[in-house]
Length: 393
View 1 (spheres, rainbow, N blue to C red):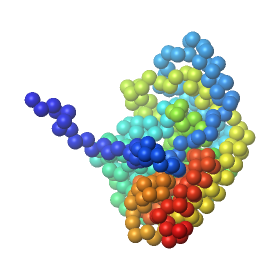
View 2: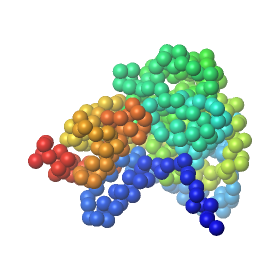
View 3: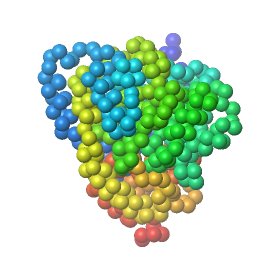
């Protein structure tokens, strides 16, 4: 009898960076020198105060059991205080906050809690692929909305208002924006809240890059009436260099938080208490923590700009977040083909713009999550490569 497992044809395709890392590792095994500037994986250490709190909490024998899905009151209070201090937003720790095992978990679980197969979801183009993936996992339909430089990478709400929104349940927004680095304008969140209220849509702002190269962080929850229609995802991965710890949180609409909490009661058993204590310690830090972090990222951004210039690319986005968004030179190929050529012929791994949607075609994303030596290697590889033979040889 044939094994039924051999007949499965999964609709789930491998995440781009998993395959790219495998190709990189194979080239390194062959003796190649590869500069990896592809993933937003912070390489600098977490705050030392956080490590001290973690060590102490780990030493307490009572802290190692299952935890509530609602999160400890210590962490929820820290999140509420963080919103008040940095954004002047009032968020109730009882009912308007839920901790997450990373914000990506929140994207999928929020979609599971709110969507049905016939629903539609507005997703930014270019934008984080996980928004569309989560919708498809539920059987809902992602509907891209265009972001481009001419409108400062802000949604054209007039265009959306004139489209059929009858089945739209969620609109994902992401400011500071990944991959372009654009920030929300002064009235962006007010307009989004008004749009959501008028159309019975839930707005979710993915605020994972709130403080990265951004001296004026904003929250959609600062807008009057936002908690009636909006939520916000946050992550300790980018802002506090705690990516591998898998810590994030969702805040906003109490009704939606309640739905999500009911779902989570079946899906996981809370976050380890020492990690929650460490997260609370990170959130209690002030602006002082971000200054050296952003100095390092800004220095790397200058190195990334030199690399872009060496490849004939032009900066095409904003100056926030941990990436540089650049327009490709006219090489007569797609961004995926160009990224493949760069890796295999020049030894430089970058993310193709098409990974983030059709509006990303013709662009590349350069990560700033690498030490300066990686940019030096990338620049040297480019100058020695036959890919740019016309320019350097």
